[in-house]
Image 1 (tube, rainbow, N blue to C red):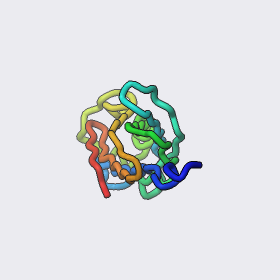
Image 2 (image 1 turned 135 degrees about the vertical axis):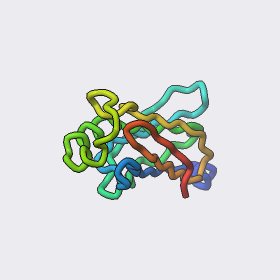
Image 3 (image 1 turned 30 degrees about the vertical axis):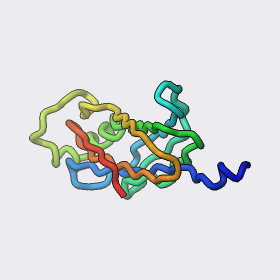
Length: 138
């Protein structure tokens, strides 16, 4: 390992999901992390995880040297299918129109963002069956 690469720390990414339709963390959502080194480069899947009871993914892999863009893929359809079968969710959403059999208009959410080496990026997802919002957290 060269001195230059040792002096330049790699970036990192974390995320959490809040289900705004029930005001609680979204547990069990599969999240995949991919990276590329340049806008014309291909995506390389680095790994994945699932949100814990607090809605957090704490164990996503570090970003490789040369990463310029990152993509987080959230598999939201399975989460809403599980929630739909829950009596609590049905009561909380009883007046909401049915979108599809999955209960989610967005069966997956892909967030792509630019990064610089050495920085940490926390990217929360605010989610409900009919919309989502993301932002760069701290």
